[in-house]
Structures are given as structure tokens and as C-alpha cells.
Amino acid sequence: MTDDLGTRPASPGAPRSAEADTDVVVIGGGVAGLVAALECAKVGLRVTVLERHDRLGGCVGRIELDGLTLDSGAESFATRGGAVAELLTALGLEADIERPDPAGAWLVMPGADGAADAAPMPRTGILGIPANPLGDDVRRIIGWRGAIRAYADRVIPILRIGRYRSLGHLVRSRMGRAVLDRLVTPISAGVYSTDPDLLDVDVVAPGLNQAMTRTGSLSGGVGQLVEARTAGSAVLGLRGGMHRLVDALAAQLDRFGVVVVTGAEVASLQRAPGDAGFVTLAGLAERSADEAAEAGEAASLTVTSRYVVVAAHAEASRRLIAGASPGWAGDVEWPAAASVELVTLVLDAPALDAAPRGTGVLVASGTPGVTAKALTHSSAKWPWLAAAARPRHVVRLSYGRAGAPNPLDGRSDEEVAALALADASVLLGVPLDRTMLRAAGRSAWRDALSQATLGQRDRVRELEDLLAEEPGIEATGSWIAGTGLASVVPHALGAARRIRHHAVGPGDDA
Ligand SMILES: Cc1cc2nc3c(=O)[nH]c(=O)nc-3n(C[C@H](O)[C@H](O)[C@H](O)COP(=O)(O)OP(=O)(O)OC[C@H]3O[C@@H](n4cnc5c(N)ncnc54)[C@H](O)[C@@H]3O)c2cc1C
Image (tube, rainbow, N blue to C red):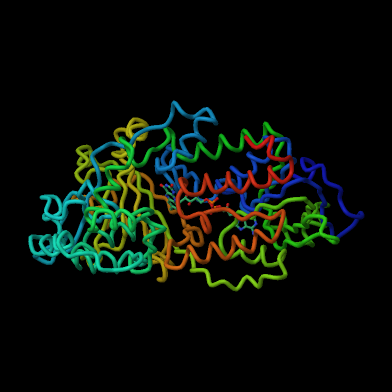
């Protein structure tokens, strides 16, 4: 590893820290860091990426199960803004972009008889908020009484001056509890792992406040946004899995001579003496200083650079930025990340051939007998996976909400597989047992999912104001850009372009 770096070992003998010098250091090898690194390298800047794990990609990962290579994290991207599709096209993956099966998702909810009930999720809405509260599909879930309360939104004038901030408060006050509990909360839990009361409307539904003002109602505003969505699918995937994006980015980084160091956890970031750039210190791999000395290897790496892109998670990023910005104590309150775990099951279950619950299932809170918060029937959702897995089925269940311990914490793999099978049986409405299970895998994301919570805009603005005063340092990644590849990719491009602009001038900024 140190050979690739072209580094100079410090004086012979222990303890050793390899040293390197570059134009740009990127801290964090998730999609944000990789995109920023590539964008800088394209104009000839020398770039080093430091990633603490032994693989790149962060939340976009892979898991091998029963001979199948599957996504262990992100499995799709939102088409909004077009940045992800553009990136995939630039990486030569355009032909492999795939639409999900149009069957749509279902909702499982508490039924009248104390058992779980299930119905297809209404198709026209945003974050579960219906554009047509009286539609058959909406009434099937919230009943006539809930639908009539929701319809009141159409007739009660919007008296409020200024914008709504809390998604939960907005939905409850305009459409009532049934819409909130049955339709909006399950989606908030599935996508953001967060209660809708804590979600910032402007972050999770940009433009909704304005559309409401124009149309005079929440359902009218939702309808307008739904109409404005470009025709076609709101999410797309990649044949073979989203993790191929990471492989393609890594190949391009290699082509542009970017130095990628995995197993390098950045511990500190400081300004170089005389303000001549930055000094980044990373611990290397999982060796102690003594073990490394014995093996004749460096235990740490010190990189000096003119520019730094901080693209780790919220906590590490804020600590590192504070180290390089003595004027900032890093004390802006930042919400803790949600602890999420996915359990993927490969099943021999012909009863699933008919995709009884479409492409997946969301879970309303209080549903009896279910611990998972959502299930994706991956082999029903993605045609490429259906073909690769046939006759087997792949389902993945997701566990964990913000602000609460993950329900899988402390459980053995055996226990988790049994729980996931039981949950999948209820959610898919098909009896599933151990004999049908070919393989099960767990993917834990303990500090990965940032929150779109109230006040996020202000927190981000404060950080951006600080960084504007700190030339040479950029921050990117979902903790600041927002959750999801459609938010992360354009933000990372923006960060890299500011560095390019600074380093090589506007002429090369195309
Ligand atoms: C289970 C799950 C499913 C998801 N599904 C989707 C989906 O279907 N569609 C979608 O668009 N989005 C999805 N997302 C969200 C999306 O994956 C993320 O928003 C995006 O990948 C975040 O990229 P990032 O580079 O900002 O952060 P990350 O991917 O978290 O990368 C940060 C990187 O920094 C590294 N790092 C941290 N600290 C240090 C340090 N001190 N030194 C060096 N390196 C460090 C980490 O190891 C990590 O590799 C999902 C997320 C999860 C967790």
C-alpha cells in the first residue's frame, strides 16, 4: 500500500508514519468522496482518497449470498435532478440502467380483527400524502372517515403565514391522523428511519410549501408536484446492482492516477504551518504501532495537501473540520444517525412467483407480529435479479428507526434469520419456513443514515458559512447534502468544482 503511494517512510525503525504529498486529500471513500475525487482528478489535480474500511463505496455495498451478488445498501437512485443518470452515463453504464417492475408497493397495517391487514399503497402521492384523499386506494387504507377528514384539506383555507416546517404537523393539521399514521409514517420510517414530526418539509419535499400556497391546499400542492415529476419512473436501478457504480468509479479513479488508500481511518486534520494547506493524519489498517513496526510497515500515514474534501459521516466530518478551523468549535447540534440493519434472504418459495405484495411492503406502526419496518421483494422489483435468481427469490427486510436502539442488536445470526423469516411471512402473506431458506445475510449500517430533521437547513447553512471563511476545505456527503444518491452526487460535484475553480481557474471548470 505504501509503495503505491510513492511515500517516504520516516526514519528507519519504529514507530513509523509514511508521508505523502498531494494536491487534494479526500476523506471518506463513499460515493460522495469518490465522485469528488474523480472530478478533481479530471483536471490534472493529484488526489489521494483515504477510506477507513477495506472497501470503497460506503452505503453502496455488496453482499454475496447463495452465489448471487446483491446490493447490501442502496439499490436504486431517484431520477430527480438527473445527476445520477448523467454520472452513470459518463461511466459507460447508461445501457445498464433499469426500471423497477411497475407493480408498486403494499402497506401492511393493523387489521380490524387484531391480525395484520394489507393493501396496495396509493400510487399518486408524495411521501404517502395523497393527491386525491377520496380515491379508492386511499379509502381502502384509511377508511371513509379518514378520507373525509383528509378531504377537509381542500375546503379549509390555508391561513398560515410562512411555511410549514414539520412534515408530521403539516399532515396532521391539514389531513388528520389517519393519513399521518397509515400513509406518511410508514414511508418516513422506510426512507428516513425517522418520525414525520421530526422531518423538515423543505428538506424531504422541496417545493411543497410553495405548491400549497399556489393551490390553496396540501392535496392540491401534492398533485402539482406529482404532475411536475418528469414522466417515467421516480427511481431507477442498475443491472447487476448499484454497487457496480462504485466499481466503475474506482476504475476511473485508477485511470486518472488517483491514489486510493483503504484501511486508512483519518484521525486528525490540521492546517499546515504558515497556512500552506493541510496535514491529514490517518491510522493504517487494523495494526497496532508495535505490530506494524515488527512487520516493517508504517502504522500511520501523514498527507500534506493544498485542498481537503471532507466526505466522511457527520460525527467524524465535524470533528475533522473543527480541527482545521480553530474558529469553529464544531458545536452545532447535529442529529445522531439512525442505526439501520438489512437482512437479506434467498428463498426457495414458489408461492412468491406471483409477487403477492408487489415489489415490497411498508409497515404501519402497531402492526401485530412484525418487527421489520419495511421489506423489498428484490427479485420481484428488479428484472435483472429475477433472471439471475430464478427460481429462487430474494427479499430484504429493514430494521431500526432513528432515536431507538436497533431491534436486532445483541441477537445471533440464527435468531435474526428466524425473525426475518417470520416477518417476511406476515408481510408477504405467504407461509415461509426454515426449509425454504437457502441463505441469509446481515448488513449493518450503524452510523450511515443522516436525518432530514427539523433545523437541518440552518445547520447546513451555518456550516457552509464557516467553510466559506476557510479556503481550501470542502465538506460533502449525505450528512450535509441529504440522504440518497440524487442528493449526494450533485453536492459532491459542486464541492469538487469549487476546488477546481480555486486550483486551476474558471477556464477548466466545464
Ligand atoms: C441501507 C441503506 C439503503 C439505502 N438505499 C438507498 C437507495 O436505494 N437509493 C439511494 O439513493 N440512497 C440510498 N441510501 C442512501 C445512500 O446510500 C447514501 O445517501 C449515500 O450512499 C451516502 O454516500 P456518502 O458518500 O455521503 O456517505 P457514505 O456512503 O456513508 O460514505 C462515507 C465514507 O466515509 C468513510 N469514513 C468515515 N469516517 C472516516 C474516517 N475517519 N476516515 C476515513 N474514512 C472515513 C466511511 O467508511 C464511508 O465509506 C441507502 C442508505 C442505506 C444505509
